[in-house]
Amino acid sequence: MAWITKNSAGMKVERRSEPYLTPAMRDELTRTVLPRYEQKQGALLPALHMIQHEYAWIPSQAMQEIAEFLGLKAADVLDAASFYEEYWLTPRGEHIISVCRSIACEFCDHKAVTEACKAKLGIEVGETTDDGTFTLIEIECLGSCGTAPAALVNEKLVENATAETISRAIDEARATPHHHNGRH
Image 1 (cartoon, rainbow, N blue to C red):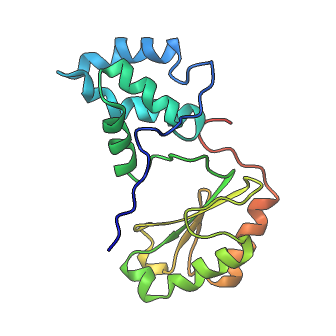
Image 2 (image 1 turned 45 degrees about the vertical axis):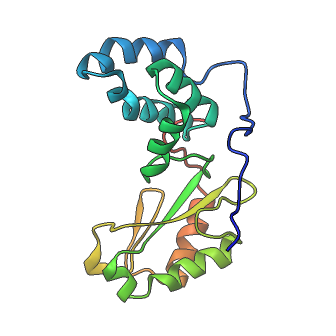
């Protein structure tokens, strides 16, 4: 088996002049978050949440800024951010479609719902449409096992989902501007 190497050390991070971790965020972290933890690294997850809430995702530059602020290695910040599913490390679409993949939904053929989404939007799970309108993901249990398969289109629960009902929900979402936490 051949090893596939990547140039991690030479990776270029897109940078903008304005910091993502603003002075106001640094101040809030210093005043309200850091005092709750014995060590500065305890504030890592709250700092990541703060960035995501503001921008709707966590750019690499922001992770570097958090690392510098908390005295951590950038790799450790990336490890934490990539471990938890709720953090977005790439920009996400205006509308999020989440198909449940838990055991009840799997038993009731959630794959047909996912396939219908993929076909309608022309993207794979984890991708965003080229126009930035839709992101498709699969997630664990939506708590609607009695009406499996289930999906969320933004915050709207689609119960007993079929190719037809998910397609209709996507059309409704397309006709309605939606802004998740944060801004672009």
